[in-house]
Image (cartoon, rainbow, N blue to C red; front, side, top):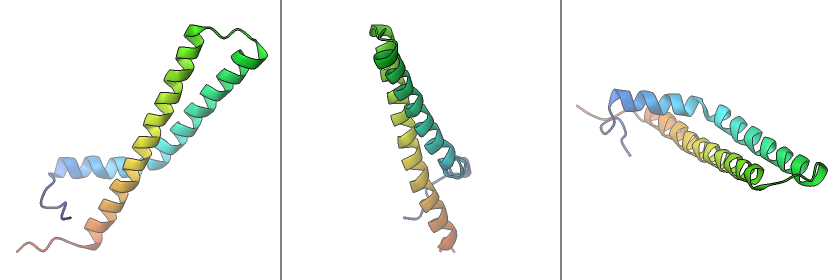
Length: 93
């Protein structure tokens, strides 16, 4: 796929920035899930005061971690596209 002919400079810049942030996305995903699980363990097993609001916060945190994981997967793909477009320069005349 020739992304040089399809994407604008602004879109290429966005892809490069997203590709550089893949470690951040992975760390954010792991941290968010860890916070959600620790919140669940503390309020569910230690304090025994789990209610609907706390459960909703845990669900929102887990969904946020899932979203960060999807961003990480996208960033990995973007970095592969970036490397491929650099390795194979466009053949425009």
